[in-house]
Length: 357
Ligand code: M6R
Image 1 (spheres, protein in one colour):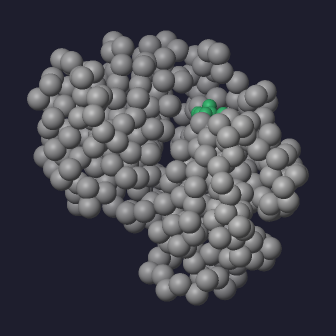
Image 2 (cartoon, rainbow, N blue to C red):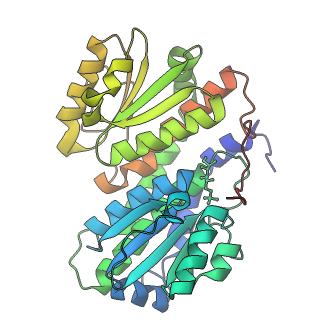
C-alpha cells in the first residue's frame, strides 16, 4: 500500500535507508561477521571468473558490482546484458560462476541464459528480491535483497539493495581468500543509510532542480567518470522511462569523441563528481559543455565540492558513492515526470516484470 504517498516510486525511494539497515541486519551474524551460505562462499572462492548477467537497472547495478568484486575481492568479473549474452556467449573461463541479478527473478532474457548455463553445468547464483522466483529456483544459490515489494515500474530501492548485497558478497569473498581489507561493509552501509536519509529530507531541492532544468527540455545528458559514469547510465534510464525525456549517460572522456556535438544553448547536463581521482577531469568536461551553452547541474561529494555545485552529497566510502548519488537522480526523475504529467508508477509501454524475450 502507498499509505500517504502519492506514488509508489516516492515511497520506495524513501524506503532506501531502511532497506540498507535491513540488509545489514540480515547479513550480519551474532559475532558481527558476514552471514552467508557456506556454499556461496565456496563457489565464490573457487571460481576463476564471475559473469554477471542482468538487464536494465539491474545491469547498471552489475556494473558497480564488477568494481566491488575486482577492487575488493580481486575476482575477475564481466558484466553482460542478458538479451545479448543469450545468443552471443563469449569464450568462458575454466571455472566460471554466473551471477544473475534480477529484482523480480522472472526476467525472461536472464532465464534463457540460465537455461543454457545449467545445461553446460556451470554454477549460478541469483541475487533477487523474490527468493521463490523462477531464477532463484533454477539456480544453485540465492542471495535475497530484502528490499520489500517494489511496485513502481521504475526500479529504485532494488538497485541500491543490489549494490549493497554485492558489496557484502565482495567483502566476504575477500575475507574467505585471506585478503587484508580496510573496509567494514556493515559500518560503511550504516553511513550510507544515514546519508540517504539526509537526502530524502531535502526533496524540495530536487523538485526545484527538476523544475529549473527539465520542465520543458527535450533532452538531457548525464556525465561522469568511473563509478559516476555507471550511475549516470542509471540516472538516464530512470529519467527516460518515466518522464519520456530523451536522456543519455556518457563517460566524461567520451564527450569529445562525438557527443559534445549535441550540446546546444540550454541543454541540461547533469554531472556527477564523487570520485577524487577523476574530479579535475570531470570538472574540465563540465567546463567544455558550459562553453557550448549547456545548463550544468553538478552533484558532488562532500570534500570534493566546489562553488556553484547544485547539490553536495554527504561523505561516504568512495566505493559506495553510487548508493547515495543515485538518490538525487531518482528524485529528479520523479519530479520531472510529475511536472510533465506523466504516469510515474506505470510509464507507457513498460511492464514491471519482463517475462517475454
Ligand atoms: O526484475 P529485473 O531486475 O530482472 O528487471 C530488469 C529490468 O527490466 C528493470 O530493471 C527495468 O530496467 C526497470 N524498469 C528500470 O527501472
